[in-house]
Image (cartoon, rainbow, N blue to C red; front, side, top):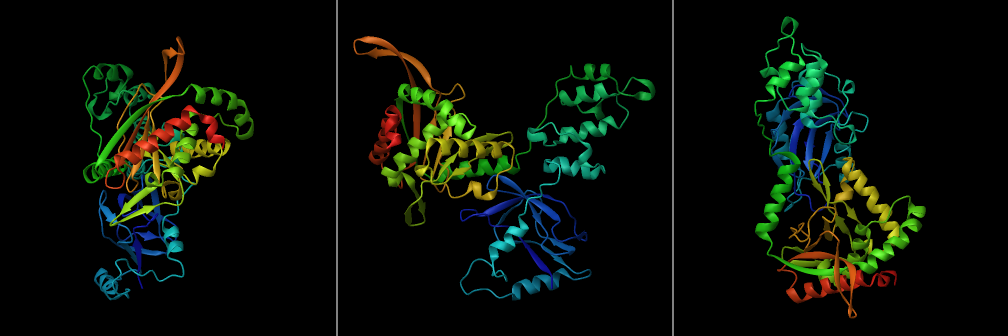
Amino acid sequence: MAEQVLMPKLGATMESGTILDWMKSEGDRVEKGEPILEIMTDKINLEVEATTSGILLKRLFDVDVEVPVLEVIAYIGEPGEKVEDIQSYQKNSVKIEGASEPVVESTSSSTSLEKQMDITVNRPRRTPAARKLARENGINLHQIKGTGLNKRIHVKDVELFINSQQRVSPLASKLANDQNIDLATIQGTGVNGKIITEDVVKNRLIPQSHTIQYTGMRRVIGEKMVQSVTTVPHVTLTTEVEMTAATEIRTKLLDKISKVTGYRLSYTEIFIKATAQALKAHKMMNASLNGNTIELHSEVNVGVAVAIPNGLVVPVIRNADIMGLSDLTEKNKRIVKLARENKLDPEHLVGGTFTISNLGMYAVDVFTPIINKPQSAILGIGRILEKVVADNGSFAAKQFVNLSLSFDHRVIDGAPAAEFLTELKNLLENPYELMI
């Protein structure tokens, strides 16, 4: 009997996934464990592998289509098996009365889904578009050196390799790649029409425009932001915090924590520690609205927004309230590294109860962060600036930072939110209390 390929469900909050690329066509032979498509969900890319060997009989959805979790997306079966028979089998399959999700005939549904979402680690790191272009031109990706983050292969790397095999000089090919120039539009003036450097130089004087597809991670992020802004009544409070004492403590702890963990303590870890401790005292800030129920979370799981080349991810530090600065430094540095190398596992991105977005490394003082649903609040952090202020009848240079707290007014009122922000301000201005 044909086997269904399902859209994996990765975490309780995941509702759908987007198909990025089909690696197999209908009628192709697939082997168990072989990737058959790539999906985008929860801001990461996953390859879905075949859980059985056979023929890919039917693909039910096209590329860039968003599909609900646990929905059938394809069928794998025996040669000659008719799709009509498969769909009839699907309609007659047993379901629990009143259930909205299909019954998975396995002793562990999570085990079956984990098999489908295994990530292949022995293949060159590449974008879906780069893999597609390489496949169309019969190119082995192991031959190509990627220029992206962590040597990830992009379309331009594949195009550069293709051009180097054609009638174009290596220097001209590299120059065209750097300048985003399509070599197909250039008439070569070299021997036998070969494109040389001078041809590319002349061409680059003509303004070149290009577009970026609004798909994949960029579209997922955009849709989530629109949904949050249009369905959640945002209110943002701001406060200025003196960071002089926190700066002094960080300086004193730098060498000690570096010796223990191998990582440098940053202000981000101090913000995480202070925020987690404040959340313990103000439980409504650590809540989620689910239908007609407000869930007050027992765990303080802080998500930290991390910018990556093609978007944004929010890996989660679980139980941040019971971790010391050494543990927080090691944990945060590790997940940020994984995020930037696109190596996060699905479990790194689920279970967050509150989010921090730190733009302190940029020339940003104040901003209004958007809530990461289904959470009820998010903290925005600006850059630390030195100011000269009055101090006991004299003047002194002190460090300050602006904090912006956006919260869901359906769950949290203004006064409790202000109390939380005041508590956080007090902890950062008196950081010795973080040691209690």
